[in-house]
Image 1 (spheres, rainbow, N blue to C red):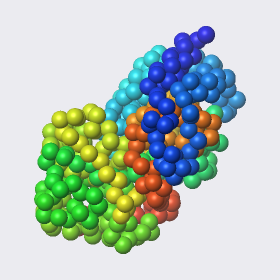
Image 2 (image 1 turned 120 degrees about the vertical axis):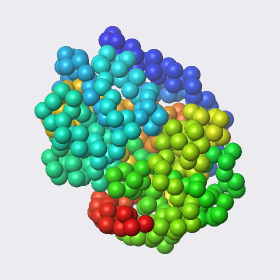
Image 3 (image 1 turned 90 degrees about the horizontal axis):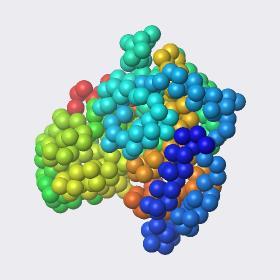
Length: 391
């Protein structure tokens, strides 16, 4: 048995230990609302998992051959992957342990725009990123520009059609919904809706994760607020107007919400992804961080994985993709409070321990989530670029 196979067996064993019975961890109503088929017990998870590794890639390359080629390269370059983001810390450490590769992690707090720029500016060097994790509008732009190379992972067919490029130049890896996270020690009363944030109690307290001119997180925040204020997926104008009102009221602060600002109390309220806000509660218990997914604007978006067309370590890049879209990689994202793109396939094959779902907000709220199309993303990005500087 290869080392990577033994490591995966150990992963499933630990996941089994962490899981608990369905009845203790998940209400039947939540499961029904999400349309899930969930494992009835940890033992069933172990029995249902199947083999420990896929024999072939989608391109017909033996997985062992790809692993050997990646190990010969010896390294993978990633960019803009903070360890607190959707469980990337565990994802990265597990990958390194499994395959024995070194990883260069540049600009961990970078934006989607900076990821694409790194491909351009570092082209032909050994420091160029091998892979990127960018928002959909940035993925579309990068593919159009020729920054990415097509590649289909073994599990490509189980990725929803609306989450992948028709030429396999990029595809969605995980998704989340925009939420309001807040420091319960500093914020009273607790906000429940986006409109609540206009209240005088939140003066100098509300931040976004990034700038919508360069950040997919922030663009998605504008989408969510637009839905809550009479806008639509085709019209984010009311979202831009809302932030203008928020700034005029003195509530919106020009500080990007980050793990550091959350921990320090500099950003008492952050409009951000549910998986990030949910993760902060465990990371920073002193902040007493709470999270709500407002019912007045339930907006979701996914991030996309792509391989640099001139990657200095092309085999390691493909192995990384195979790992992320394997059952193991997808469940690691679920452990980080995000929804992996292959969620429905995992549920259908009874791969999801109930304990992982229990940590998420009620499935009823996610049933209301709305996603923008590629065209709506592009239109919103253009409108924000023209109007955001005037708020």
